[in-house]
Length: 93
Image (cartoon, rainbow, N blue to C red; front, side, top):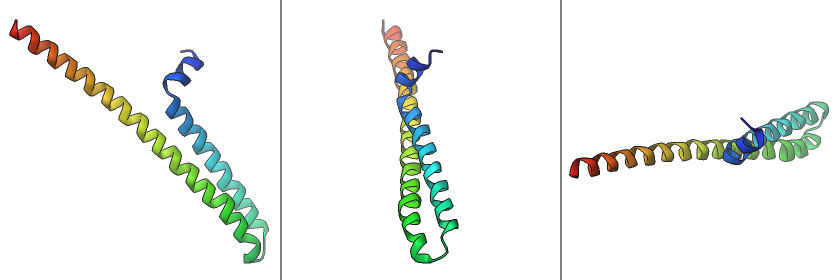
């Protein structure tokens, strides 16, 4: 499948993967900064920036992925609904 076509149709999953990667990198960089700092006052900026941003990005990634799954389910339900309508019309005629 063409990558550009897949990215256009699955934009929310692609964005979810990108947000998850950004979040993981942010958490790793925050952890690396905290592990090098010895005083708690030096660790707080790393926790506040890397940790909170990483958790936020992972939350956005999860929300986007769930949204993509729900969109797929709605599409399946619409197909089922259309099939039922077609069957009912065929039986009525």
